[in-house]
Length: 336
Ligand code: CUA
Picture 1 (tube, rainbow, N blue to C red):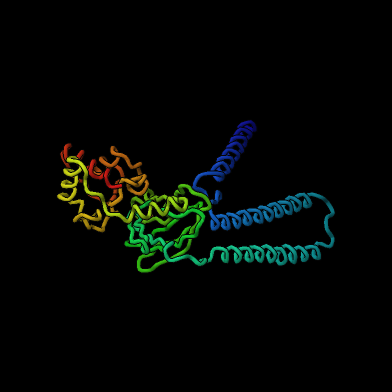
Picture 2: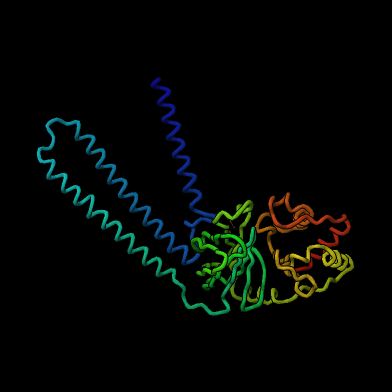
């Protein structure tokens, strides 16, 4: 009996050690709020560590008092003046210490809030993000650019992010750059993000918004200044005219299909706005809000059977013959 209890105890200990190791390993890298890559996330992470540290000290202190009390009760002839000692413990442990802890946390929270407040940001560094079930519309109002799911920003420069929603409440969260902020129908919320270095930062919707909430991810792509300017310039251009016969046939397939009721390709009759703007589709890394990499196979599968890729998606299937599909894919690949 005793051995079995010991074994259970040991397994529990191993489980706790493994869980803590995994947690800490996960904290160090990847899209973690504890791996800050910009000033906002760094301030939030500092506050988090402060809370953890103070919480840890209080926890250890309480445990020491608990053990002390347990130990003392066993001794005989204890404490004749326990009333006096008791009131001192209430004074220090119940009033002085909580006041110090809470005031310190309050002070650091105010410092953090102040650091996160909106700095002076030029008008052209504004990105307007509209939440949809289940994708992100990304607008650069100053540059008249509309794209989706992949947000290009200049590295090392603050960018104003304006958030709203077209349907239900979503939440914008790029853990390495900032905390969460909701996208609420009928109002706009705004904050700012900044990435210290060029890189790709993973983000996700952080508010349950329906069946495909889990597949509503996004990428923030921070680029050096010149590269970002070049990207903006390229995005401003309308789609190029198809250069070969196959792509031309693909364009006819596209314009003759139901695609155009939901999607826009600038420079053509396709002006739908229910789904993502496809003018520069081929330049994106992923499809369906970072659900699959953007390549020919995935794009074909997505067009023919979107429910297979993202069950519940509002995109209907588009039945096409093999030849038409190949032509359509050849056309879509020209939309860089
Ligand atoms: Cu959008 Cu969850």
